[in-house]
Length: 203
Length: 203
Image: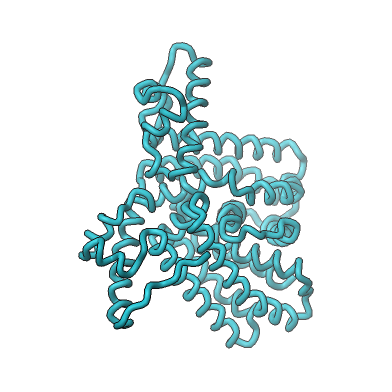
């Protein structure tokens, strides 16, 4: 199940309003969590009436779905970029320092951590997150396959699926790690993640 | 800052009562999240008055601190076990299939995911989580160092810190991965995680 966007007559103005609600909601969820933040609090932070917000989003679940979609688009752009760089495995490895540093920024990942926790208990959010993950893997899989073929490495289904999930898992672990260890040595972590990623990509 | 346990005249009886509250709280937090679950809801689920619960825990933060401490004790027992098995690196690698399967069990990790999300916005919980992580790393570091020395591998501070955090990060990523991809191929994931862990441990 996915939560579809409501249609509006003036798409540009509607996009601006949606943006306004999402920024306010990100701040409220970050402060109070998904359950702690009410639509009243979000509407106050957005400077719009709750009724007006409902013209754009059916509720908090629809707001979360919009955040998930933003993240799918962000990752999709990164994957499209890999495809243009000749050797996608080497390109991914070259990006590890930048990617690791981005994934240990604690402010950036507050909302995704909240969404993961919410997905564990809310079937609507779980469905949104599962659908997003499925689309990201469908885009990533052929890139990883082509890259491994370029290096003459095994591309059987089990190897591809395992590597796909392990590579994503390395990056999904970093925001958790950053919340637990605020004294992370980012240089040392980049070196270690490079070792792990090199093994996952090139063997 | 750590949250200390309240002292009681009959420690055994108190431990049983605390257990009762923790079980009820785990169910409530799992269902409604940390902010959605009230002390009233927890006291109802525990079959104890809210006043009675306050004899054991000062509030929800103290309950979360007790869950974090349980996890520290669980990991501490695993680390002590590694020390008894001659080659701790090989022992860790041998345990990857079991560890990966445990870390993708979605029910088990609902509460830790919730605690991580809460740590990102609640300084009291953040302090509890940071202290727990510091103690786990302090126990893990000499084991990893001894294991690497046994194999003639580098044990400089940066290498040790990086490997320590990357190894923990691999395991912290798996519960997130399992919430995003409910169709995980556990065999394929075990194979891929073994590749990553082997590189992190033995190079």
